[in-house]
Image (cartoon, rainbow over all chains, first blue to last red; front, side, top):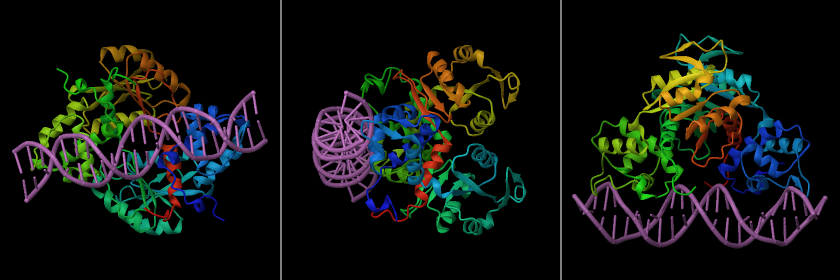
Length: 216
Length: 216
DNA sequence: CTATGTGAAGGTGTTCACAGCA
DNA sequence: TGCTGTGAACACCTTCACATAG
């Protein structure tokens, strides 16, 4: 009964990363119907890009008309597995970790935080929104009991690799890391996304002085 | 006296984005000398990638030996303009905005926050680390007086586009946006980097169930 | 003999242009 | 006629392979 996996086409990462933007754009318009032109404009991409991306998964539009916004949103949610109720564990209940929990609570994003753990005894037991910070020791148990499929790492660089290894060993296949350090993973089925503010800002510095870089 | 601009080669964005990772790796090793192999490993890339990236800007290594870590770090800082003391303004002093100020203070990243502004009278005047939150009205004045070259937008979606327009009108050419919405900019000299946590997590959800995607 | 620097080959993602269908 | 869906052309980035220099 798998719908998309059977096609066995390799989907570009870039396509996957644009789908959530399309989903948001579909939510914003109250419209019933929407063209790839409008959808692309709202999401910040071109109409060709929209059509190509969607074509990897099937033909959801009507020629000469456009797409049914509600139906297309449902398709995208299914593709991204957002209809499965994806649950994540936040490792590290420092300033960043707690901010992440609150953020996710506020924005109904179809991904929920199901557990927060920390290694520091002083922090364990504290309440963050609807969750109590648990011990890092219970990481594997919590992942299993609460059927967690995503890991979010918000610990200092020192302990990050060990945390990642434990997440992977527990069957986690999608990880978001805020650690200011390169982490390695051998299992090719595991996808790790890094968000590194310092690196981001340093790269941006390059463009500060970049007036008129010849053409484009 | 320009060193790199004269070459007029178009540098791939991907290269620019890897340079900060190389810089960090160079800081981590106490070593005097380093090979592209080791540097790549530390930063999470291949040795060929390292050499190609650096070759866009010149020949900094010694054949048969490797690179001088300190010299190479200086080169990268110069390329990224991190030797110029890049200053940024944070627009929006909410939870995220203040967290950004503190984060940047803690991690000496060669990019400093030189001003924080907000539109909310209740927030204006508050002290965040070494800065006092100023009125959004003074945005242009602050950018000019404090020679700010980078903008960081951490406001709700509603006011974000207007903020971006004002930043661009003030001559800002590098912007980091945390706004959960696509922003548009017509000036091709302006570079806008989006960090959107909700989109990031939704994209990751796709990989949660992605076991063994055939080959690779 | 080692590790850099680089043209050439290869691969991946985007844009074009239009055929196909409502 | 209008907009989708898609092969083909294109552009970009990465990997390969080796000439080059110390």
